[in-house]
Amino acid sequence: MPGTTIPPFPDDVPTVPLLVIDYELIKAKNKIEIDRLWEAATTLGFWYLKNHGADEAVAGMFEMGAETMALPLEEKMKFEQGNEGMSFGYKAAGANATDETGVPDCIEFINVAKDDALAYPAPRVRTYPSTVNSRMERTIAPFVRQSMEINDALLEVFNERLGLPAGALAKLHPLEELSGCEARTIRNPKNQEMPQDKAAIGAHTDFGTLSFLHHQRLGGLQVLPPGAEEWKYVKPLPGHAICNAGDTLAIFSGGIIRSNLHRVVPPPKAQAAFERWSVVFFTRPGFSQVLQPLSDQSALIAAAAAAAEPGQFDKGGTAGEWYARRIKLQRLANRTGPETWKASRGTEYRPDYA
Ligand SMILES: O=C(O)CCC(=O)C(=O)O
Ligand SMILES: [Fe+2]
Image (cartoon, rainbow, N blue to C red; front, side, top):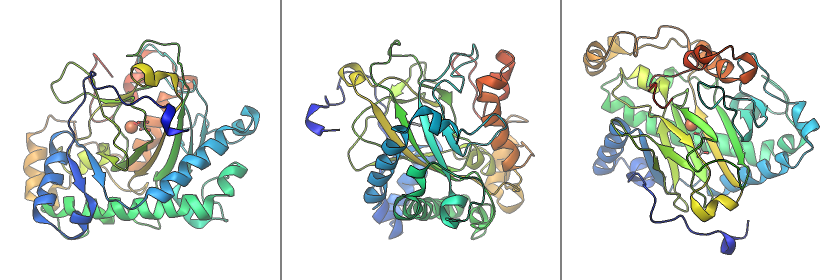
């Protein structure tokens, strides 16, 4: 999309002032930057990340998404993720609910399992459209590797600040174990015939541990800060990723790290006339890992978990069950009524919004 024609993000809409974290400083173990990352993760659970070095792979992911979405719908549907609680593959527009009344979403996306990208050409989980296969080695695998390296470095910081023994969080995300880790490219159609506050992706928390998100120039992502009544836009900043913590990190940390509600609405004002694309990598635990606060390994987590409402973080099932439930029950094909939406929710649920 030629940059000159895209109107800038408007300066008169409510935005949330995320901290900008410098990945180079995090790698250099800069104490001040680590403190800032910790503050971001434990207050809102969202931050910008600059100097992450993944720009080329991210650009390739946008291209892969455009090539894939340009395929005939019939071809894309051969790789649809299905209704059984698996996210890998193609998700058609309208397949998911965006709220408890069952209003359909309007975005389509392609998800590639980290386990397929790294094992290519041998499928570990499933197969993909030709446009994915042709970029598996030159685009998707490098994006997966770089994203994992970045998320692993952030996890190491959290591991230490949570008072956990070295490698405790990493152990829950073994490279070899099948997991919900995936790379995603999303297409959001332009000129959506819907009000500006109507969700393209409904209010949700992310299912996994850490998300590494990229936009081009268009806004539309909003967060609902703790205690706030009003959704606030996250302003896209060129070259800056947006990172957020998800449910499984909130659970492992007994709620010390925040998995915050967010949603996608049409881009604000004049930007709504343009198609919006996003790229994400989701780090999620191995499917067999048990979801519970790591209280037996950290006094800090034990205290936080003890202070939390019963049932909020002591979930008990496996990461595989958590992932499958959340995906399966947001599919409209599986909806029986408002209870299906409710049963698909994550660690944060605000009945007035989510
Ligand atoms: O497109 C975006 O900005 C956010 C996407 C998102 O929240 C998700 O895929 O979980
Ligand atoms: Fe999300």
